[in-house]
Amino acid sequence: MIFSYMDVRDKGRVAQVCIAWRDASYHKSVWRGVEAKLHLRRANPSLFPSLQARGIRRVQILSLRRSLSYVIQGMPNIESLNLSGCYNLTDNGLGHAFVQEIPSLRVLNLSLCKQITDSSLGRIAQYLKNLEVLELGGCSNITNTGLLLIAWGLHRLKSLNLRSCRHVSDVGIGHLAGMTRSAAEGCLNLEYLTLQDCQKLTDLSLKHISKGLTKLRVLNLSFCGGISDAGMIHLSHMASLWSLNLRSCDNISDTGTMHLAMGTLRLSGLDVSFCDKIGDQTLAYIAQGLYQLKSLSLCSCHISDDGINRMVRQMHELRTLNIGQCVRITDKGLELIADHLTQLAGIDLYGCTKITKRGLERITQLPCLKVLNLGLWQMTESEKVR
Image 1 (cartoon, rainbow, N blue to C red):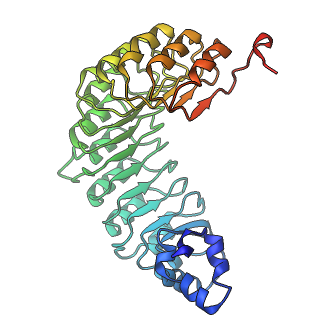
Image 2 (spheres, one colour):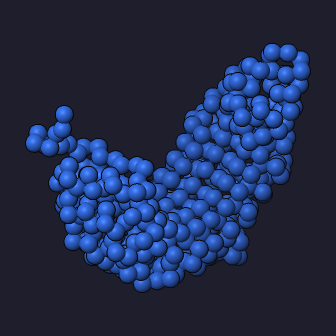
Image 3 (cartoon, rainbow, N blue to C red):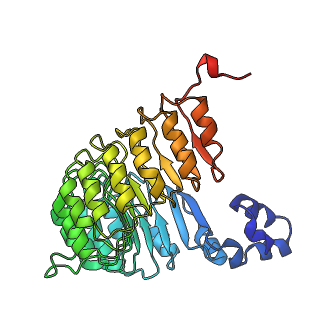
């Protein structure tokens, strides 16, 4: 039906044309996959019956001035609930909403709901047994106890975001990984785990992850200053892992990359941007053991044309290369990239101050190139063309 290709605003407009179009626009196939974005400010008796008539089961609450239970009661078959940024949501409000099992709910986003504590996670673990995605980024009051509750109740969880949960430590990650089976089975089906800016984590967390979370595909450890090269040994044999983010992990060096390259990883994406101890030797290790990478980010690392030369001949599958603010890269490095990385679709050269028009002309000849970020780069007067 053609109405299904319209955006939400136009779907509402065509429903006002005539009765036939209204009836056609209310067909559930027209609204499949649509997320309703709501401001809950005053009572509206027709709101939820209207959403259910359209088959809408995904809701984002933009502002919450009524009880959350108003939503849960109005949409008993809800599949996705996004409360991101609802700063006034409390444990009490969530507790009044989740008073019985909600088997249909698969996705819950509580990012930046800063008043939420472990108490709410207890409710979630008890009543949302089928949850597959849980977003807790910025919920800074969550502790290891909350993770124990998650590990006890949410066995079907596939994606968990704990960004900036500052109280979470190795103990909590151990709970998730099933290291405390007497208390909780763990979330052993996790495929996506974000631990960005969890400052209390050490290499012991990576040991727990490698032992218990064997289905993990994507791991974000950016800004985790407590992990080191030794922790990479634990990750190096995770067969399912295909994306690893180590951005701004200050204690990761060329040695850590060596451990990753010597393992059995089949990584598709690796980000070591802003790791001050990463240099040309890392590129040599990548060429030896991580040559199947499709995306590589090295922004602000201490790499040079020599490192590029040691890497490019092996990286036949590379599609995205981010080397912004790598100030030692010159036209020679760009020429090597242009000669060998023929499948490259995107490259970031932001802040590469030693490159000139000559190098850029070679890069722009790449047959698959779609994205070129130059940012701070500027041509000298002699290079400018009219």
